[in-house]
Length: 244
Image 1 (tube, rainbow, N blue to C red):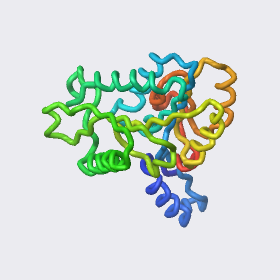
Image 2: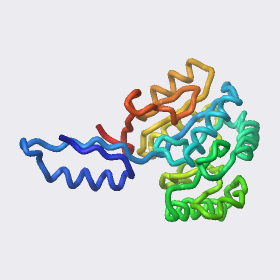
Image 3: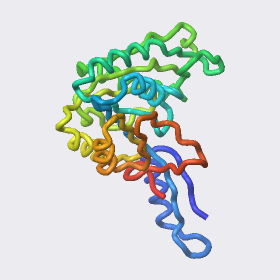
Image 4: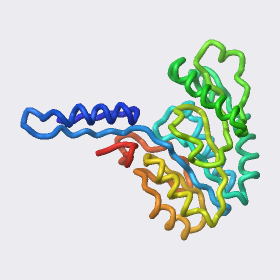
């Protein structure tokens, strides 16, 4: 027998600590299989197909109101295509329908609790106060009676701007220079998390280079990062994102 856990890194560590002091009835250590937090990133280079990037980013960041362990948190755009891609992304953001998820026309529903709503909103306000560019869609009147957060795009200067995962419909966008690609992958690795990672490029050399360097459990090339089917594809993280 073992313990399976999905949740935050902090609670995962707590469980690990508790289990480390115990043995099973057979006198063996109790295995812990944990799938925890992330700071999931996607790198998009100038060869990528912009329309595909936008569709995959919108799905990855805003489906399920961003409340998937695999959801996209940091989008890294090569600076040569950043403005054009961001313009398209902001246009797609404005097309999203927010509301009750029992309506088929709705794309994004509420976040899970009022606490979650407050935490996410506080983060967005703090980023705005620090002078970061924030793009948000207006919430429709019918969302007044629920824990809704408007899907949001925030432009950041570096991964160091983020000290924890924001578990909701918030996408952080970072620009990078082509010659800094290796350093960018190193910065993603340095967050300590390693659940999902996406790469959009049409260059085989870049695919080989980036996938060999990044340390994550699940790598998605030229597609969205949220599509793993439970019990069909193997799925797990490394580093602070899980064990087992």
